[in-house]
Image (cartoon, rainbow, N blue to C red; front, side, top):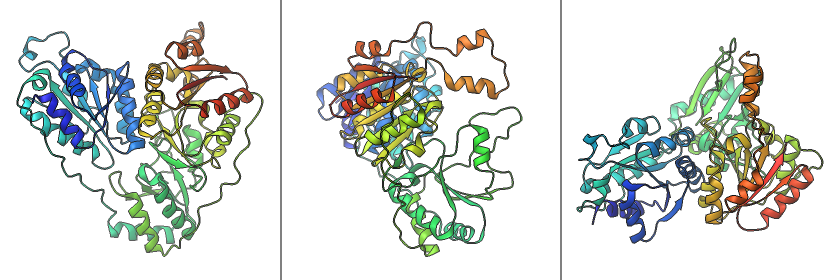
Length: 512
């Protein structure tokens, strides 16, 4: 058995069933092992940032890591942006990065790079294997790290001789540490704050946004009168009928500061205290009042549902039904608007859909109009590196067990990882992409104003995606995805309904 074969056997034995890949020469023995050893689903991405983004989306829905196969340091570098997004979403991924053979490294061949250095910035765990006999054990440790709560990026660097040399040893799965509950003293202190203090906000993030944790948060809120909100960007939020109609902390600084101006105490549950995405002249970095006190019920790695359950017990908060979100919206008609598109989505989406949201500025008002939609999961780009939505939708479709994925996708961001459409076509994935075509970097127009700059012709040209316009219907068709253009909400609703009723991917260019 060579090192590559021990790697595949170990990954499979540890429960890793999917490999998102863009391989090169130094990974050919891994590719050969994937061919010889049954059990691993291999999904090709045409650019490494698609590969890493797919692994992110897969984790969010499957709750277990996939492997990525990346070609040397430059291949890893191509995938860094979506590994950054995955790290911010606290997703678990096992990266397998090829490298020069150990004895070839000193010759400084063209693809030789500081692969370890590039990996450190996006990895909570990293190791370079130096012998074929070590590869299996290193793989088991990588899977253990990826599964450690709340989810971690683990990167294995594999010199090519460690893959082709004989002497590979299959390693057994390692025990994964269990997520710890909150300390009882912490629970009692938070309960005291909820009972005794005024103007308290419980801010939910991470797994506190799953349905079970939401039910306990609602009980605590109703027993004490405190308000609940969600972080601004979230890896996976369970929403719709029977779930909490949670507002998020707004993205624009002025809106966030206003929305939180009343807060005297912030209780964090798998969340961070709200800060600005960027600094602006004369605007505070903290978006909650400086006088507000911050209390941590659970850190990211702790069990949010268990902590909220214990909090309800400490408060003697009775079990109560979740709030009624009201009737399901009717689909909207006429000219496109963010609110109308959100209502149409809520009216037509199938039960248990998955929303991959990279709508950027256009989608800031989508949440209120979709509270009464059928049950669904909503994923967002958590690290701010654009180009996450399309690959996350693709990976979520593979991890979602056949559920319909709806990708709400800004056009500028889509161009970063448009190759995702090809993978959707090849794998016949149930993804409907609603491409929001305003033909400009709309969010940057707002940011230009926020920093007090005065835009001129050169600046405006830098933020414009016209001249020439991008032909999205032709682009999708060239990658094997059927597509059509819509200019009204009537048209986009009809196309949505048609796409939801058929297998495979479909793209709707909504001209806004």
